[in-house]
Image (cartoon, rainbow, N blue to C red):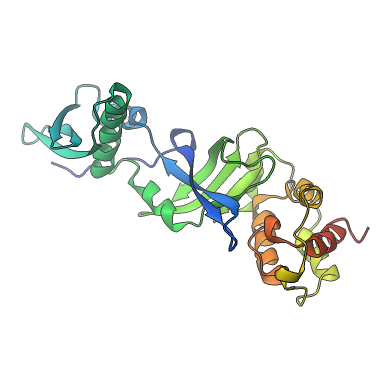
Length: 265
């Protein structure tokens, strides 16, 4: 049987869900992970697309507490069915059984090679800061994605409601603009650099943390940045203030940053 190479998943075929909560040193929530996954409907659609409606089949069976799906592909050369199996934990509850059937299809599809590159996303530090708009109850979607032979090379994830870019990995400014937000014409990083010295790192134990009003004002400005500039802005936060997000700024740092973003006003 000739080796089949499945096409890469398109952005609209990839689902995004909230994963683990990320906490600061004090144990307070400061962000959350985003995880990529595919649905069983996507697997079945790609199997139909690749082999035709009658060129593949599947069946389910149990091994102890595991529901297993076997996907079989018909090989015209040998006139045989070639199968790949995989599955997950089973349960007696009807909805759980339904979920495990779907999950086993997805896992068996991944065993065949469908959407397997999504697993490389775990190597991308996909953590979103908790803000008024970006919460664990918000919805997110993949706006753009690209791959090489083995993994994801470019990924843009946006907030479905606000269209704000929340994850930008390996993307260009042109790609970032697909988030349907007008790119900021000013170079925010250069402007900030003029007004804030590299030594503006303080002892947070002796400082009041940035208030919600100040953080909101900063977010209103940085939310207009393109993906590339926002990524640079995040790097600048780390390099200048030694923080990973706006939520970790002290009030004095926040006010200084806000002043710089406003052009010294």
